[in-house]
Length: 488
Image (cartoon, rainbow, N blue to C red; front, side, top):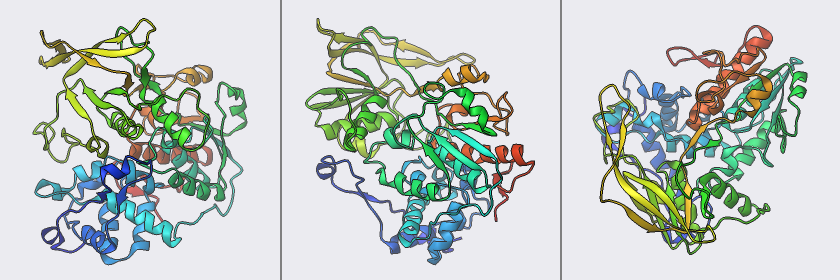
């Protein structure tokens, strides 16, 4: 793969960012792409490693050494074909995936791993630029109709695969635009929405029907789903986690996803009542994950007076922890571009109270430092450290605490069984619920997870639906070894 000695000759190079002082003035993407010559060098760093652990690290089973080699050879169109053979939307994953493939890259044992995610992004962008990505409508139709509920990455992947199999697919989305959290939950500076729209144009030309403002079970009777031969539920895990903390109902305590969604809608001229703004406010973001990072970047673009981040877990080490050795996903400190734009980060800190004035308006937060007590055979215990109480000035607290699972309303109305975490139950490997013609995939089935898992689940569920309807399927799938079956 690549150049035999490439990994010895070339160091890893990543995209650069435009200066902070410039990029916080707008909501556009701010990466500076590498030159074609440099990307070619990066592709050549891929080793002939014998067993490419990046395959197993990637939930999609992307053929990473193969497309890296094509980039090294200058065969960009072949690289695009290889990439799209396992991934419907590399323009999404190339921007948003945390790249578990890179964490399991064999080169990463001794050097910086291959820059797989950036290479993936450059391949798909080149493919769009050159016009290689064209609609591929099926040659014949089966006469079978399928409803896909939810238009996030799982729903879109399932829809495209099922449409390719010749079925007639309708995608229902309860919001006013297609894309799920890709549309409104991901800030524009991480992925501009034109990236979604150009792919949707392809899907529509392939014959998929999209219906927005349709909330199945609310303004669309679930009985109407019986008109379809099969249903795929891809609604995501959207129940937001809160805190059992005094003052949580204060004016100024806001769910992160509401804050992010409002900003994106306003950016595109949507009407938003009483938009929450961070301008000239002391902002505290509670939660140290990607959503918290997105809130930090958005608050800085609003012109916040100060931005502080709380995380209840310990600060991860700067390098891979011995507790998560290669090729596992590493316990390691992550510093995003939003963190670099300005934030005070705090670990092992717990919010005890949201302080308000007489009008229930947020004015501050009371916190205490904590530690985790580990007892073998027991769940970790959170211990407060005496004498560490502190009051922080705060006008806006953003809760970026993740999601507890999917909403239960649709499951209740359809009679679908759920597990202890409210995830929709499906037979292992078949994505089939207790109702034979209803399938489920993505976060709705597995709980909050990665975009690559969502696309993978959508693809795998589509194959199972095809088998259910037709008795067999030519759609590709990953077998137990992670290889792909059915690729042509």
